[in-house]
Figure 1 (cartoon, rainbow, N blue to C red):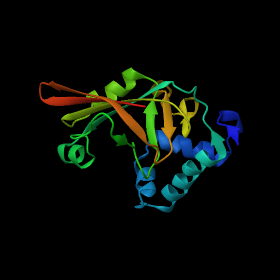
Figure 2: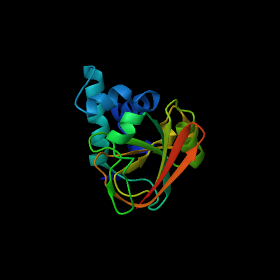
Figure 3: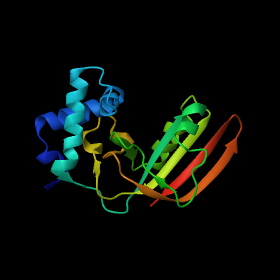
Amino acid sequence: MHVFSEEVLLLHEREAIKEWTRDSSNIKQAMWGNPPDEKSSILARTLFGLFERYTSNLVKGTRLYRGMSIPNHVFAMLGYDTLKVGDSYSPDELAVTSFTRSKRVAYEFARDGTFAHKVLIVLPSGDGMLDIAPLSTEVDEQETIHRQNLWYTVTRVKDIPTGGSSWKIIILK
């Protein structure tokens, strides 16, 4: 296995990453088993394959962030309303997930969303994570991708009510 880098990528892997950074929604649907088209299925398989071909290019322990704006029913369905210290948590059991090295970017993703629940997840980098920022269409996002079914332990949960919305900050290890 090679360490993930722009230099070792195959052309179709590079294209899959570019598509992911443009709009991951159809690719995620394919990963969840509901492919909207054949192209999305191929891109999903290619992204899954990155984690089999390459090792992480992130320095272990680098802090990574994910900001989300979530509707009430999804917030409860995903268990964010009952999450507590000591619980196990996976960002997504079935699909690749995006995080960022930038706390500011994660905060903006959550803040600028239209739903009342704002979630900010913080975790340390490790195996199964690839820094794709140099290949991203949005370089400022400092995007990383994480393979499906990575599990963490919740070490801190902080609820912050604000006018009209609520924030939940989740720290993982």
